[in-house]
Every structure is written in C-alpha cells, then in structure tokens.
Length: 235
Image (cartoon, rainbow, N blue to C red):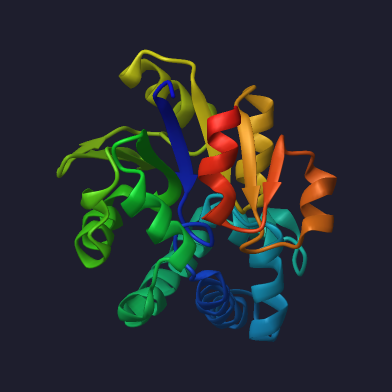
C-alpha cells in the first residue's frame, strides 16, 4: 500500500461535538442579536443555521445567520468578533465533554503506521494547543492546519489569512511533496472544498445522512470509519 496523506475535518468528524457546538453558537448568536440589533431569536433558530453552514469559518457562519434577520450593512466585524468571543467562552465550558467518535479513534490507533494523518479546521490557531493536549491529538496527527496558522509537532506557526480550503490543501501538498491526498469529512464545506480542489473525497455519516451526502457528490460515502481501511486499500 503506497503511503497516503489523509486530511480529516475536525469538528463533527473526528470529534462527536457538533450538537454541542451548534448549541454554543446558537446561544452566542441569540445573545448578540438581542444586544446588537434588539431582535429576539431563539437559540434553536441560530443553531440550525450553524449546522446548515457546517465547515465554514465561524465568523462567516455568524454573518450568514445575522443577515437573515437584519440588512447586511448592519453586520459589522465588531458584532462578529463579539459573537465569536461568546461562542469560544461557551465552548470552553464544554471542553471536558468533547470526545472522539469511537470509530475514528479506533482507525487512528490501528493505522498510524500506514498513513500520514493531518487535520484541516476553522478553529483559530490560538485554541489548537489546548485541544491537542486535552485529546492527545499529537499521538496521531502530524499537522493541524487551523485558521491563521499551523500546529506541527507542538510548534505553532501563525499565518495571516490562512483558512480552510485551497490554502490548507496547498500547504499539505507542499509539506509532504505529494498530490496523493484524501479528504475525510462530514461537513458540507469540507466535501465541496475537496471536490473543487480535485482531491478524493470520502464523506462520513457523522452529521448528515446518506441521502443528503449523495446530493453533494463526494467520491465515496461511508457510515463511519469502520470500513475506511478496506476502501483506502482499493483507492
């Protein structure tokens, strides 16, 4: 088997945390909508939009949500940054409840010598070290491409404007001097990014069901990582 570089999406894909993140985001947006626009909208209203825009930079997600209730000219960076601050504070309270999907953890543990494992995420680089330590991600992953920077073997390198999609994929291609990349994700944005960049896309039913994933046209769809090794051997 030739060595392959696997690029995992993180939230809702490695971590079974998407419902929790959606709730934290919904609470932050509901609070800031009342404070900034004097508009009352439920946590559930905003949580649903957060899930629908899964895989995007959270600032983009908040912008899309707010533009559903006010004119886009009223949605400024100050409001978005305030919302993200509240969102990250909410997440901080839930950190100890974050767990890996059992199927993902088993795959990583059993195949660490067969593949290179990397991550692409919109989580800000300043929050990555804590997640690495909390969930011992350094046992499995070589590189984590985050928003505005890269984690590599315990070292953080800040890169302004660095985010999911082409810039992350190009960095990984260059780092490992290969085009043999395979994206493994459960979010809409990750799947579409991989297709756009002509990277083999394997989608997992961790967030969406098979019918919805089929509408995105990834190369392969799996229920979970239990069948991933068998598929990778064939690709």
